[in-house]
Image 1 (cartoon, rainbow, N blue to C red):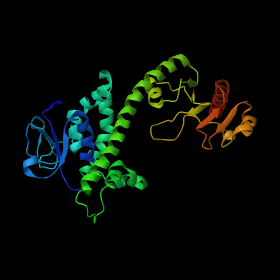
Image 2: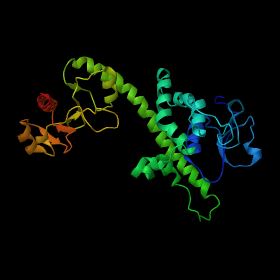
Image 3: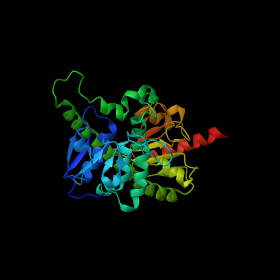
Length: 313
């Protein structure tokens, strides 16, 4: 099914809303901008018709007929056996078209589609089907996106009959911002990877990688097998920074820390500790430092490399 004027209704269930149909609505309203959302459980609305696309309601999964539910017996699964919610189904069938409409280059669509599915769609699928609980996030459980969207539901004693629909559309706008930002972020990582690879080539065997601006770099460094690199430096709006390289995604351990003697120092104190004029800041955790000029940042990076190498002898 593609974007045709014949789709004039996007039908999902009424009542309390969840992340999966909210997220699905983000995708579908981009692809079918002429269509209106109808929140209902009325059988005459949840039965397939040429003018509608039905999701998270209806008790069937039939893409050709335009119905995408996952609550029925024999509900669809991912290739690896994990459950799908309506969001997973909608992303499976319409994600590539959404990305094209979002301006993602054709050559990148497969990569961005898979990355967004893994990082953004799969967690919603698993939570909606009870395969995992937001509580698995520990103290951050209340800050997971599916949980946050549900906090937008009206209170149990809300008297306004239209409150649930009003709150659904408020949640839709918030979800749209997150989806758009996440998609843009995945595309930005692809652009950054090209720039980082080029910078690695220029750096040769230097332990310091100089980039033209701040950008995601760890994954590209890992893919390039540039295990010799210890620090990255790049300009910011008013200064230059030197930062460490994480050993693993999601792990704060670095390949090398900045020198202990620099921890938490600023301005004159940091200049005195480093001997570098223009040094202005070093984080107490020693993962980032800043300097007024490229030359000062490069000197800080070189000193940090020397200290790190000596520490391994």
